[in-house]
Image (tube, rainbow, N blue to C red; front, side, top):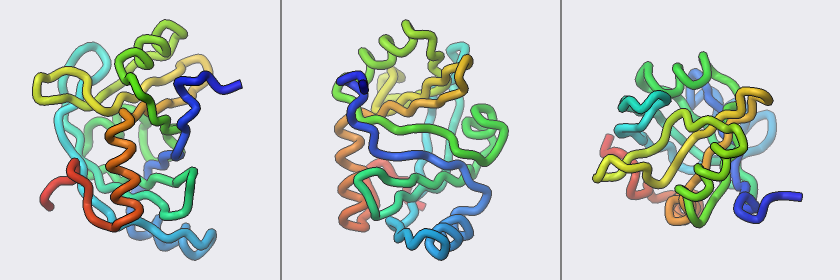
Length: 165
């Protein structure tokens, strides 16, 4: 049975070397259509309490309700440190209370690897946790960010969190 707080699984995130090639290959193989890719970046909290910067190009499949997220790392920071390279990376869950869910999963042995940062440098909108015993990565997405992602997927308009590039 799914824990009630994690009943909102809505995507599987895949790290890729080249976003356009991955989009084309998955479209040809599986018939997926894609939201317009965006650049997303900013400061993040990393394991051990440090601060790093992450910049990546991202898209989601239009088909759902369970979407495929493709992420191309632009810089050589968070994704490389987190994964060692392209692979199926995480299951993404929409949650109502990000801080509470991070704390709950940490109490179960998951380790917070990195998370988005708000203006106050606090954890904000998204956190990635890793189960070192089973290898499973979890992305917790604040419900307001999930809504912005859905609006991007449905409208094609870049979300507020996208860079101006």
